[in-house]
Image 1 (cartoon, rainbow, N blue to C red):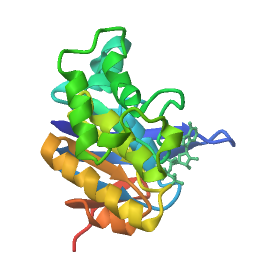
Image 2: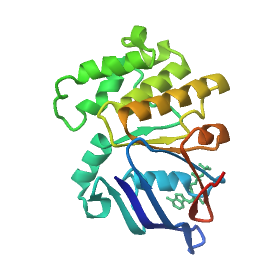
Image 3: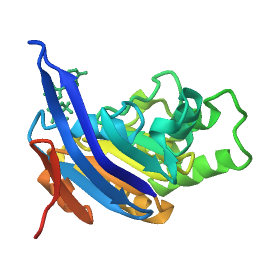
Image 4: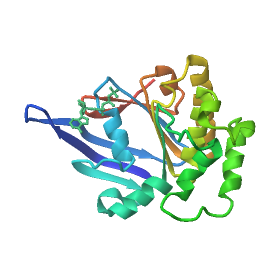
Length: 226
Ligand SMILES: Nc1ncnc2c1ncn2[C@@H]1O[C@H](COP(=O)(O)OP(=O)(O)OP(=O)(O)O)[C@@H](O)[C@H]1O
């Protein structure tokens, strides 16, 4: 369902030369998969995640999600894919401070001007309950803990039942115990929601919890063999 073929990404450096950050990356992931990508700072992890998430375009190569080739999709279709088929979780929760947790979770279901489909409110409540936020659904982000905010952000990423869940340092801003709990939850939801999960992280502990561990280095992505 997610398929990257020979993806390359080049940037112009400040000196005017061309730097190849990604050099022929191929990757396949299907529902229920969990993949971690580790690598040194500046190795291109965020660049790769942005390309997988249709937030950036490769210089060459192709990215397909459920058969749709991103390079052949128009801007409107790409926006729809980003909103409906892909969930994003970042290091910072990016919840709107003036909206309650449930309002934040429902935002992606309202994006695009459409009415939320029937049942989405129930789904939001159900997911918030599942992550232990039953008593907090009407609380504002500042009224809950950092770990609870990140759990709400994960639920928000899942509200539209995406095929793909992309997480960039999802536990990076949390202390060790909460980070561990959040990682466990992320994996549990990945299993029950049947998404393909791709996590970029510096944390070897988080990376080690994913079924497939990969390293990005010198533009190449390699599977770690235990
Ligand atoms: N828009 C851009 N223009 C020019 N160079 C860029 C651009 N975006 C990223 N780069 C360069 O590409 C390389 C990879 O950056 P990227 O942010 O993907 O690395 P990373 O592995 O995510 O790093 P970190 O772990 O520190 O977050 C870096 O050398 C960066 O300077």
